[in-house]
Length: 111
Image (cartoon, rainbow, N blue to C red):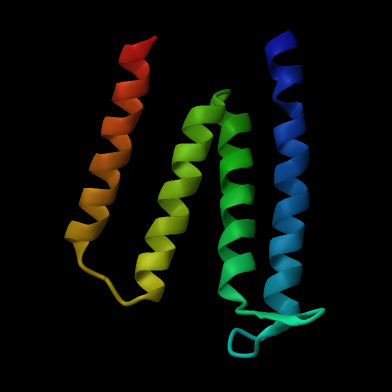
């Protein structure tokens, strides 16, 4: 019970970031830059940040592991970034999955 309570904050962050993600998608156009004071930011930067935050916190809560949640968030963000850049080949996805699995094994063997 104590370990689940420790990861409950990740569920809260995940719900908030998913709500922000949905609000962001419905509010901003993907072609128009976002004006923040002097700077103009392309909407893909906050999109991928909110996606990473939502997915990593959700899977950190589900799997009870921060590291695995971050790896799944990185995988989802990079996979969608590759799709956005029209790198649709299955080998890019296989290479990405292989790299993240090998990094997970590396961290697992260190313990």
